Length: 113
Length: 116
Image (cartoon, rainbow over all chains, first blue to last red):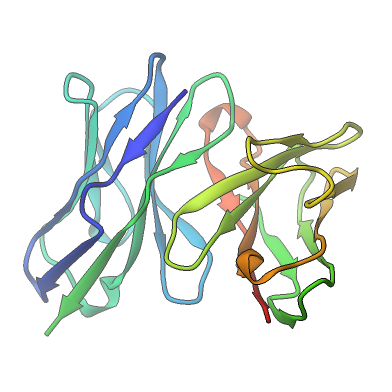
């Protein structure tokens, strides 16, 4: 079975600063990895996904993530955050043979001026 | 992509009552998923619903409490039965993208239930 760990429950950062949200996963088989964002009182929106190929994945809103198989990590980064990036970010994993998605506990990104 | 509509978007319910949440998708999909997001928590899969067969429930969730219907390839309902305050959550419907091997799930806006 897969599992996802997001060690940081909350990350405060100033506007225009860089940010990294950490995600580690556990699985005995090949996986697909995802980052979703949830703005206040809204549903989930896909930021980016890793299926195969290049380990550096670029997503929407200037976010990117790097898949590191040896470290079983899929950390999310943005070089310069905006106030509007304040939201909850969820890392998720599924194995390549089934569509069930397992979510991490989420990281709340708080961007202040 | 898929557009998912959920009803109701929010509701306040009395203890002991039941509420049915509807999920409508703008395209035919094989598998639909129901998730629960308790306040301040992550998403937990309740069950997977395939058209024409019984839903498959995850550990800790049972059909008597969360009956699911899947009458066709674009629609599903989740009922939360005999509600208690612990059932106060956001319930989300999701579906896989048209090409199932891409792995992406699309989510509805969610149904926010408050049980008094």
